[in-house]
Image (tube, rainbow, N blue to C red; front, side, top):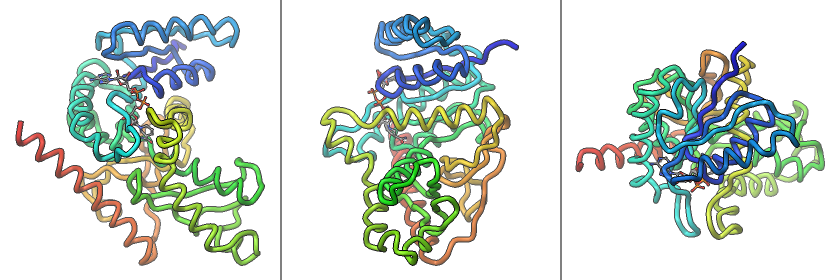
Length: 319
Ligand code: TXD
């Protein structure tokens, strides 16, 4: 069976990490693309030279012409600018929406059958811009945020409970960022819901609330520590988990920014929801019953995403 082809549009901090992880997992041949001359080819060559040591048998190439992504099975998009300290994800919208429109058009032309994972911020609106520009079916264009946000939530909980990260499950809904909705009652340690763990004295409600807030602030905490750029190891690992579920038809149940067409009462909007990811892309959007508090938080998140979509539509109209 011919190897799959994974195209990485954006060969920066996350792009380079994506390439290494995809190669180590031998998910397929990897092509890096960027507008900076030399960067994609340089990183690809460096990664190829690691192959004899790491033992991965895939080809790694890089280029500055969109023809490099021709026929890709998976495209992961990080093209754009990251945040600097003091910047919000929303501050990136002007520049990054133009980038994602161009990238979407290129994917529509060169890789129309691909499963596309958008990472560029502000995520929920960038994935909408790219899908619209690409013309690809919405079930094959998703945004990566929920897997990262739930990974952060799971890590903080595992630290609090002193248990393996593998036995902590987390459930997050909504947009990527301050309005994210971590669903405490559906998050568990080995199936024991968090509220039960509070009753069992494993933690307190105050500590749980602080962990939820630290998860919401997870990106900003790393931006502040790094001083230049944003998180890239966990974002890359999260996107690769999504790509692997598609390429291997794993049917993973993952929170992704997916296109809603009536689900959760929303239409033509991308926002983080639980989905099943398989060879068909988003094979199912899982609609759970939300209680009144969760409904209000989710609606708040949806409203924040809609505001950004309106900003992009306004920017477009002014061109
Ligand atoms: O959970 C999430 N979705 C977020 C996303 C987690 C972390 C980072 N988040 C966002 O991903 C971040 O705010 C940025 O918008 C993207 C990429 O972050 P990264 O840290 O990889 O940024 P870099 O290192 O600056 O890489 C971006 C690359 C860089 O090499 C640019 O030259 C390139 O994008 N770039 C372009 N490539 C192609 N086409 C165009 N127009 C272009 N413009 C810039």
